[in-house]
Image (cartoon, rainbow, N blue to C red; front, side, top):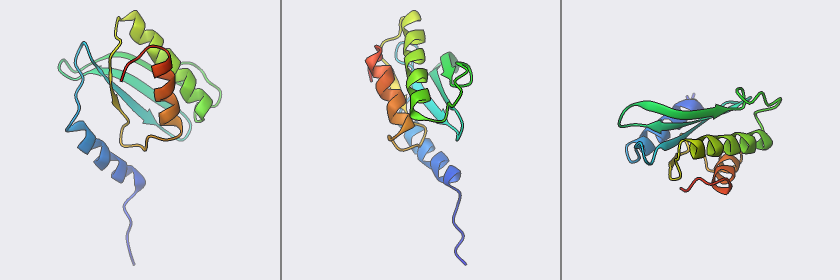
Length: 118
C-alpha cells in the first residue's frame, strides 16, 4: 500500500524552501499569507527584528465567508491600507507554499492595486 504524505506537510516543505531565499526588513517587509478552508490571514513581517508590523484577516474584518475570493480581495485591500499608514510601499511576497492561484492570487492583486509594490 502506498502511503501519501498530507498536503499540509508538502506545503510546509515548499514554504521552507521559499523562506530560505526571502527575508523581510523594516523598509521592505515580508507579506506572508496563510489560508485555511474557512479564512485567510496575512501579515507584514520584519524578519531582522522578528516583529509583525501589520496584520489582517477575514476573521478580523468579520467577513461572513472569508474562504472565498471576495474575502481574499477585501483582506488584500485592508493590508495595503495598513501598510500605507505605516509608510510601507515595497514588500516581498511570501505565498506560504501555496500555488499562486485563486485566493492567494486575488489577495496579491488587490494589495498591488491599492498601493503595495512587489
